Image (cartoon, rainbow, N blue to C red):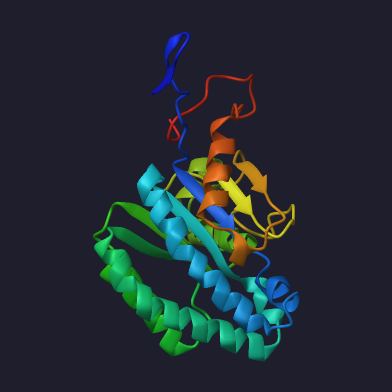
Length: 251
């Protein structure tokens, strides 16, 4: 609470914290190119932001953070860049998993491990398994992930159970997505000036608030992240109806 010398105490507005934040971490390659550096250097620089964003989520009370790390379309990139990206991700997993576990972070993987090198796939599985009992913050790593493929997998699971068409509804589809059991994202952030979802959480993003910045991901620091959260706090979410009161923590 702040003090105003003329009117007395001033009550600060309540901060509305999103329950689930998703981030499209874009611009690593362009960040590197503008500096005359290999794209791999940009990817490594981008990984340095992740810990600060995670720590801020824990601090302010975000419950779920979903990071778009590697899309199914990224396989079209040059082999050298993909190999470098996988090596960087392996290093990050080896370096950070234990510390994240101590902070109470639960790591989950959304997407598939098809085509992923066995050593990297095993690292991902181990990170998920070793942190599964933690409950302070869920970090979904969207790796080898594409929303359309995710929806196809969900439909295939439903069909395999023999459900009749009349019993298929939105809830059943949601239950069979990779994010089953989790609330949909409240806020989706995209860096590097792009204004599209790029096959990311297409089903779950139906009523998410969208926030875009021209800043490349390696330069998207904690201060800018807090700015996005503050902007979200000022929005009135409609969910298809009339404007209502601000909603706190997805309630």
